Length: 164
Image 1 (cartoon, rainbow, N blue to C red):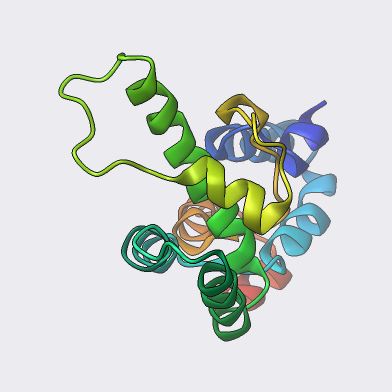
Image 2: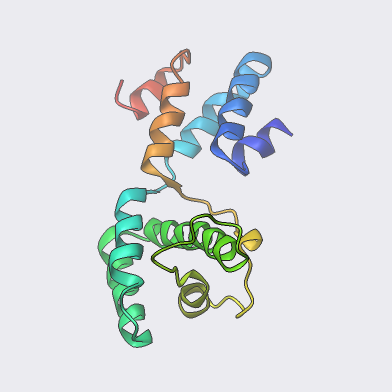
């Protein structure tokens, strides 16, 4: 179960917690897992946020939105597609809260996350924020926080991988 929590966490704290318990109870299993995790591509959450909020939402043409998205992924790597997906699901959560009157004050700038999830990722028109998938990539800041958690690790291979 710890390995599953490490490989497919529902939030980054679960991965770090699983790492710490694995390192304590099963230290022989940690190195391979950490090295594999450190090889996973990252995306910049700030670039993704700016792209979605400042470029995708303001553009109303579906064709241009799709083109902007394709260009962004081409320029920033495949992991950025996961970043946009997660940003849209996070925004959809806020959009739903706003639509249901659960936000005070209401959003001044309305999100269009559901429309973009349908257009860019093929979700059904009634997609809900609770349907956010687990993605195999991760944000660069999440990776940095994970590396910070490795401070007591004594693996030479991990140290070499992170440039220590």
